[in-house]
Image (cartoon, rainbow, N blue to C red; front, side, top):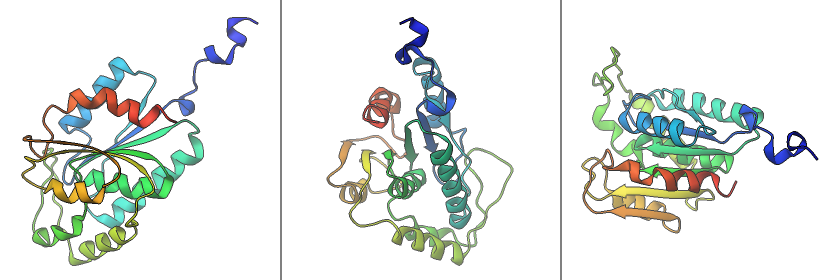
Length: 214
């Protein structure tokens, strides 16, 4: 049999390649440092991995519809493995999607119950950290929508998760995430901050976790 006839040597079609979906945090964007760092590293070391990082609306209902539709389309058109990576608020969205679609997810200093801190921002003009010329204003309805989304995540998680958290997180208490993802793989580090310092050293293991068993 010639090399070209051997399926082991056939190049993977785009839809068969591993797909990594990165979900950024609240008021962040796909231009965030971690997102761009992971994207560049994958291009250099794992060019077979397709990288997708959508801009996520800060309004929960809009975000849920857009992300839900995107994942449903991927599942219908992409037979290759799919893995999720979520930072902060993106960690919540990754969990929400992972439970619906049975996907593995890596969660970086994730928000477990976003609705608890959202009321502090209702009615305020919110600017993206990325510097985009946009202004958002949350409403009480947005808090209610987030509570409904949180209620849709089961208390006993069925997905496969890896929690990456640092105790020096100045925004979220990592103990909540430790408790929420108990029973799943966890890496809890002393020090650090909400951005998760030295994230790059975990990127090789991240790819292995998401795609080695799929």
